[in-house]
Image 1 (spheres, rainbow, N blue to C red):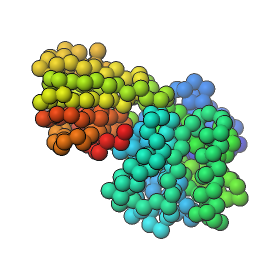
Image 2 (image 1 turned 90 degrees about the horizontal axis):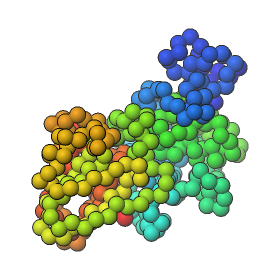
Image 3 (image 1 turned 30 degrees about the vertical axis):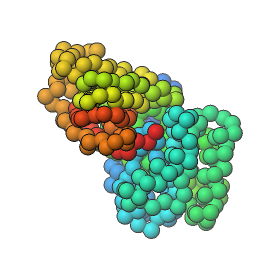
Length: 360
């Protein structure tokens, strides 16, 4: 019998069916939760259960190894950990940018790397290398090239040390680790938080540690129930929502966020969201009525029952020809440009809205 689940790393037990690590029989290799995930895609435990981010960082600091930090490019803002080096003192960090294949092919790797380097500087984060990864669910040349690059960096920076994989929940970390190990043992899912404790594996003469996904309670992913997560997490390349506006307009990302745009002339709005998430556009003057009548129905998924419980954010003014991303953390973003007077955003009060220089 295995003492720990091969899928999520949690200690196995057969006493409490509602607790982590439950198995009907102690000769199982996977806990009941991982078994359901692997065979039915069923998530029965909230992503907030498991060990906290502070506990995960403590565990990482106890290990002697080089950190490979997976960061979801689509959810960049909710994946960045400001001043990460101060939280992991003495650790060398290699950044792996996952889900590159979700972003438009017109965005070059060189532009991605340049953009990320600027964001790292703004967040006071130093890394030894940046690896751009995608196509990890497929076989073939691109995937093999990424694996080779990770192996090369492990030899160069870790030398004789172990390697530690960390990242936010749903950053693609366990998918990547499975590829490196040449197995499908670790539990992977579109649902965040499927690794619940540190998992130790042998890899190329050293130990590889897969750590639990870090939590970000300001991301949509931390608030939505598992069934609705499938609507907001993209699994296919993005098809931008593009429109030109000449009058005040309101844009709804399901019922989770609303962006109101007051313009003085022509403006451009480009949305980058999961293809499963409906984007609604209408006149700003009619937006309150629409939300009051249809929130939770046509405007879904939703976390609020009324506009009154949503928080309002005010964007900085655009200057000249500059483009700005209005990021709803964990959900996606609108890229705005043109003759715009004012932008306000409404979202669930627990969700962070970020205004940044345009990525694309």
